[in-house]
Image 1: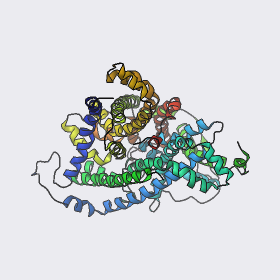
Image 2 (image 1 turned 90 degrees about the vertical axis):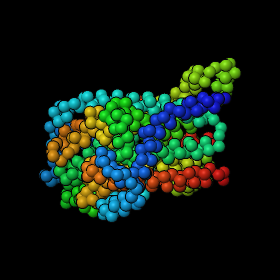
Image 3 (image 1 turned 30 degrees about the vertical axis):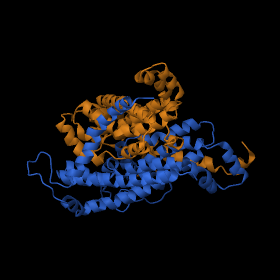
Image 4 (image 1 turned 180 degrees about the horizontal axis):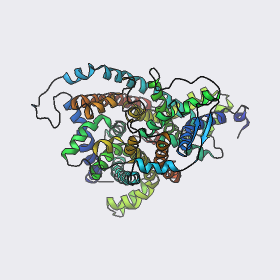
Length: 289
Length: 279
């Protein structure tokens, strides 16, 4: 076996990178959220209690951002997991060209969040846009732009689902293929409906994998900022504001460093709560039935 | 194929897959056509196509963004350095964890996944100040280290599952022959783990290639493709859609080609391994 010394030696590089470039910044964010610290400003550093939290929570833009983020995360993650799983199930049995279909279906995920925002901004546009083409062919009146008031958050959620679902189906397929074919044959003999097959064969086998993918998707959804900043810029008004975009704006454009860091820390706190839920679920699911 | 699975005449699966492929690919095809200056004319009814196919839009990229070729190169260099660094560091850590037995190991591995899901924006603001004080902001090394810290936890989680699935007998034989840990690692574990390492490397490369907040906020001179794409889209510059479309396609092409070439390896990437381990 490896000696204890070697095990620590092999772990050291990871921690040498994570501590200064991830743990300390996250910790600094936490500490800064309770003080009046702001870089490049020579002021007396002192604790301010919850004043920073009160300050950003009093901002209607940030309250909108929290509401949007909750809705955005729940809707996109649920739909990404379910649609992605359905696609993987559809790809389960081999057919000619399956490998190519799998590769083509991954394409949307290869587009960067920025490019995704740029692309859909133009596709949702009223001139030369994709969204107007079909109604025009059918002779229907021009639909309102999805980036208008009332629809913009829905548009932002749609492009996120378009972007992330391919990854879910890509990751779920190898898991599905580990289900022994005898189990599918048995289900077919018993005449189980597709729904029953999903419930009694797919979900028991894939629930840990789906939990893992779900956690990554939740983290991603909570941090959403790049695609929205291009697609709508957080607008109209602050209709599509997210905590990530808000903290970015505060820190780098409004020069409210503390407000930005506090808003960002709330993303970390939310993720840690989700993480505890994840640990509890893993423990629960691992218990043999 | 047994007869019961063909019971349904109506090809539900085929129709579903065609729909999914259409939704996934039509937006990209639409962008590809626009980049070749083939666009619909929505003004007339029914709409007609304005087709003046040309590659001029791709030349326009160079006018709008004179250093686009450089930015492509920087993107490749940065993603390659990040990938190499991330996979090396994560492989060492994953191997160490996979071959240790201590209480709380499961907790450490699962924590890696939780850390991996933390979005970079959550700690980016303090990180940018910290990098300033290390004098690493706007340096290639600083950006690489920041991206390594971002992607290493995911790589550890994936590689841990992979290494743990490898048989330990060959390693034990090497120990008995008196091989040192690094020798065993290089000559026995590394070849056996190569497919998993390659698949992880591809994923990290794609993530790093598409990463925008780190190069955008921690550097000004190190510009990657996604950072350049922001410039293609500012309201002041009023760039037209075909040029933006050409830039989008030019940004997608290298990574698309890379993934297509590496497809076989990528199919080995899986997060499902936690099912089989006895954590």
